[in-house]
Image (cartoon, rainbow, N blue to C red; front, top):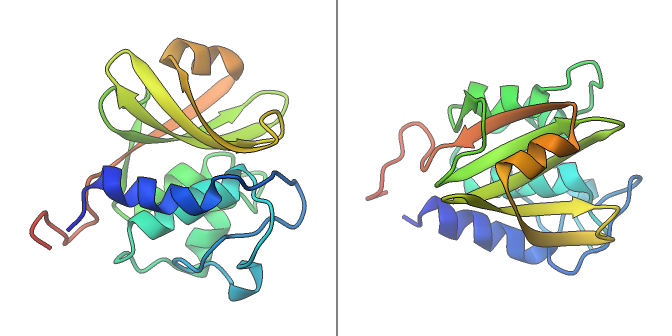
Length: 170
């Protein structure tokens, strides 16, 4: 079985070069419980990127339409629903900081909201995101302090290497 690094980077690749949109975002391929009507060529946004990558990286999780809605933040009153979904499915753990040596789903809130993934490299993080300011999908380097300073409230869910019932030998 592939490592989480391999699975996430494989799922991130189809998003490279895609533009950004607030309305009518697309998923580059079918994963999890993503409606097939949303799969196709077109721009993405932060939640289509994080939803698609997470569902694709954990293909053996029985993702439901409710999980899809939570990862996509359909209920604006539930600001932390992406974290709740990965924790409920057993692929994430609530945390107070980004994982310094692994993967983290991050949800930040300030003037607006933004979801992204980070990969810890000791004192630095690689941020995988789709944003208006980047005009699409990108990877960049940041520190945990820089991320925290960008938002008035930030939630973190450390992603597990494997889903419940999986192991390294598959």
